[in-house]
Image (tube, rainbow, N blue to C red; front, side, top):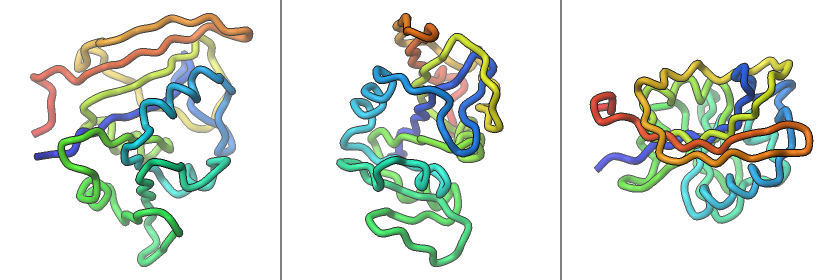
Length: 167
């Protein structure tokens, strides 16, 4: 049995996801959704994403942190030293959430089973972007359009089409 790999990410219209290792916006509903979806699950992130979290490790989640420094340890976290190592440490048969950053998303996107997107309907200046999504590989399973004070956004869930699933 394989782990279910889900990416959860908030992206701008122009695929921007961050600048200076910080999020580009603060959406209370998005943060609540993130907590609700990831609660009780394994989350996987790069080390810079881990250190950008306001509170760490994230409670009620198994935190896997990917680093390229051999033998590096972070208290309260499971360490992975490659993408394959992270996959090997994921929980089999249940959802594991990839939460960033940019290069970690890039490496997991081709093998992800699900995408949980928050799409902010505005372009942002950024230094980190999410890879373009080939929507032909995905089936939309949920959408909720929201209006915010500063900009509109949508929650969109995608499931990889059976013919595009990883082996």
